Image (tube, rainbow, N blue to C red):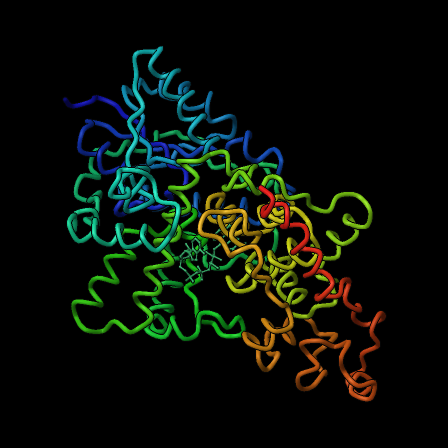
Length: 483
Ligand SMILES: Cc1cc2nc3c(=O)[nH]c(=O)nc-3n(C[C@H](O)[C@H](O)[C@H](O)COP(=O)(O)OP(=O)(O)OC[C@H]3O[C@@H](n4cnc5c(N)ncnc54)[C@H](O)[C@@H]3O)c2cc1C
C-alpha cells in the first residue's frame, strides 16, 4: 500500500546512504519528511560542554545539508521525542513514522510510547534492523537459546552470514530521493545553534559526520591488514577510531563488513581483517546481551556476583577521584585517564587496564567507573561500555575470570614498552628514562633527580600497593566460592 505522507525519524543513523528506514519510507510513500529531535530527556543531564552534543550537532547539520542536496530537508526539534514525534506526525499528517531499531532499554520504552501515541491517532511506527547485521534473537545456540559466550556466538554469527549473504545488501536510497519533501519556501531555519540548545563547544571538532567517517575509514584501510599485530599498543595509531561513527551511524556496519568481504575476494585482505571483524561482532554480541538481559544496566550479568561487596565509604571516594583525575601513581593508568579526560577517547587496551585497576586494585564497584566512562567517552555506547566494564570486573558474560588480575606495571611494560604513550600524556614524566617510566617509585633517586621528578610533588606516589590490593580482591571475590 502506498502511503501519502511518511516521516523518517533519524536517531543514531545520521547518514543517507544504505539506511534501512529511509529506504523503506522512500519506497512506500508519495512524500517523505525527515526529522531529528534533540531529546531533552537525554540532554538534560549532560554538562554544557558535552563533547557528544557538539559532535551530534555537527552531524545533524551535515545531514540537513545532504538532504537539501537531494531536494529534501531536515526538520529539527528540541524537546521530548516521545511528544514531539506524534505531534509532528499529526501536523504533517504522516500516516507512518519510520525508524531504525534501537536496543537500549530506555530507547525501547520511548519507542513503545511513541508507537502507542501514534496508534491512538490512527498512525503507525515502522521499525527496521539497521545498526547491526544480526539483531535480537537472530543468532541462537543449537538448542535455540541465547549465547552468553562470545566465541560460539561469533562462529554462529559467521555461519549465519554465510547462509544469508543478503544481510549485507545495501538499502538503496538515492534512486528514490525524488519523493523527499522539499523545504517550505519561507522556511525558518529549524536547526538550533549549539548555544540555543544550551551547550558550548567542548573544543576543536575532528572528523564529524559522514565526511569525517569516510576520512577516518580510508586512513584505516591502509593499516587494517596489520591490525592483529598492532592493535594492543596504544602508542601506535593502529585501530580504526570508527567507534564514534558506528555509534552515531555516520558509517553503517553493513558497509564495513562488505568492505572486508571485498578485500577477502580481491586478495587484498591481511591477517588483521578477520581480527577486526571479530571486534565488530563483539559490538553485536554486547548489543544482543543488553537487549536480552536489560538488567545488566545496573546489575551483574552473573547474579552470584551481586554478592561481591565493593569498597564504599572510608577513603574510597578519594581513591575514585584519584582514578578519575589520573592521579593513581601508576603511569599507564594515569596516562590513559588523561587521554580520556582530554580527548573523550581511550584505547581499548587501556579501557581494560583502567577498568581492572578501578575494580581490582581499588575495589570500587564497576558501576561507578562505567558511569564515569559514560560521561567522558565520545563513543559512549551503553552495550559495549557495560559489557567492557563487566568483563574487566569479572561480573559479565564471558568475562575475565575473577582471579585473573591485571598487574598495571606488567601491562605497561608489555603494551607501552618504551613508555611512548605515557610520555605523551604525562609531561611530568617525559624525561624519565628507561624502565622507570612504568613504576617511578622503583626508580633510583638519581634517575628521578635527573628527570626533574619529585614523587609526591611532580607525580604522585602509588595510591595502593598492587600486591596488597590483589590479595584483598581475591578475598573479596572469595564469596563466590561459598556460593
Ligand atoms: C571498559 C570498556 C569500556 C568500553 N566502552 C565502550 C563504549 O562506550 N563504546 C564503544 O564503542 N566501545 C567501548 N568499548 C570497546 C572498545 O574499547 C572500543 O570500541 C574501541 O576502543 C574503539 O576504538 P576503535 O574504533 O579504534 O576500535 P577498533 O579496534 O577499530 O574496533 C572496531 C570497532 O569494533 C567495535 N569494538 C571494538 N572492540 C570492542 C569491544 N571490546 N566491545 C564491543 N565493541 C567493540 C567498536 O565499534 C569499534 O569501533 C569498551 C571497552 C572496555 C574494555
